[in-house]
Image (cartoon, rainbow, N blue to C red):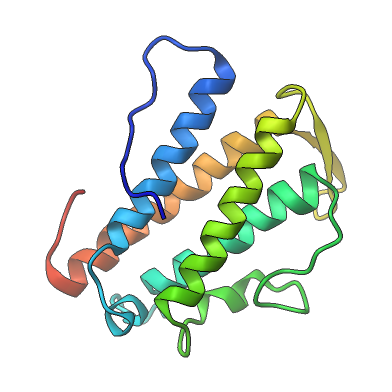
Length: 168
């Protein structure tokens, strides 16, 4: 996964700004996981929570897949780790490995980037079944930044509890 964080442009159009900000958040999660073993990535660092860095990576693969492929691109694809559609299953990284999780996440990020770049505009819509509403690509990109920002906050605490590393 790309771990170079490139700051958003100070003077750019809406689409380019959203695109780069989302990639900034993706890179932040990758950097929070950098240099850790599979065991450390699976460590549930903040009891009683069972959340782990590897669980976050798996969850974000599901979120990328759901919003870009299933909602915007209307692809009939199941979730990566749950046949029943339960996003919570991705958080269970008990038997997961870095390679398995990061390969799935990277694959879904690449799909998402392709879908966004091929979309005619940010006004392209897809149907969010859970909400029973149509949503724009603009909303999806903003929602994804919100998801990453929230989970990167979790990643900050998880990483600090593992080895004391703060910041990126």
